[in-house]
Length: 369
Ligand SMILES: Cc1cc2nc3c(=O)[nH]c(=O)nc-3n(C[C@H](O)[C@H](O)[C@H](O)COP(=O)(O)O)c2cc1C
Image (cartoon, rainbow, N blue to C red):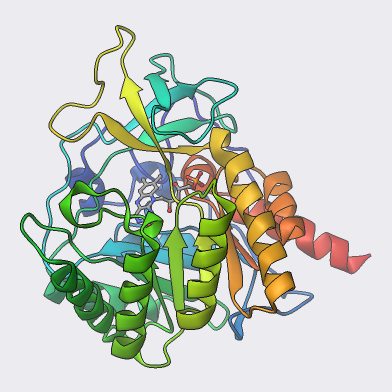
């Protein structure tokens, strides 16, 4: 198996120097040039939410833009992968560029005035930290339902495709209207036939109020409405980082009551500045943007540990999806040890298409001993 070489300072699964639309049309040519790994028969059976899987690892909502990407992800061993978040109506993408390398202070903490500066030199795998600024674009439901059905056909016996969705906050909208949009989109996502659905709660609430997941009253109402819209279909709730222990306990209770799993963490919001201290991403509402990759690992890991502790204390049933800065097999094993039932990597998988294969080889050699 050839080693990953990254001379162009670019991701392999997504071309960061091309627009979102260009990437949507074609899977990055660079992954096509990578040889598919060969998976022999597994020595053990893994499960997630009761479904048999090849490996408790995959790619979260984001880098897999459509069915062509899902096909590649499964071929490269990312056994449980997620279709990028969709909406109840088409929604435009933020202008190019959508991905920039950034640097965060060493003692970077989750706080309102967190800042990151663009790293013009670029970075080398595995120490990659980026901001991704897409604005959660979506095609019309007719398009994505058809495409997700196609993606579901690429699931082999031990693969799982999760379909991620969210509601759209609009100007002048009432809280009830946003809740209904979440429920409507949940129903549309269910109509694809996906075995598992994921609601992205780390998205804007009404009236520029911040993210839905930090408003616990709204989060509970949204989850309740979704549960009644999708009946018993397994549901994952995807949330951001919580510093406050009381709030985390509350979101854990909501997850246990209405969902089957909780996915942590989404990106960490920061002001993204150029070397002169000015807004780096062009256009409105783009001063703050989500940071992901290497630097946020400690925060994701911490959330998994805390959620696992709450789960044990309260006898909760939810499973935990650990996400955030998983760049190497070592990171995967740390998340597993912390209590993650499933681990997913966005940035790491974009730069290293063999990440799942490398983990699978270690998992299987350990079992062979
Ligand atoms: C290119 C890209 C697009 C993303 N889009 C979404 C999205 O549509 N929905 C979502 O819930 N998270 C999205 N994310 C966030 C990831 O799912 C993940 O939570 C975050 O990147 C942290 O993981 P990482 O450090 O492995 O990148 C996106 C991330 C990346 C890199």
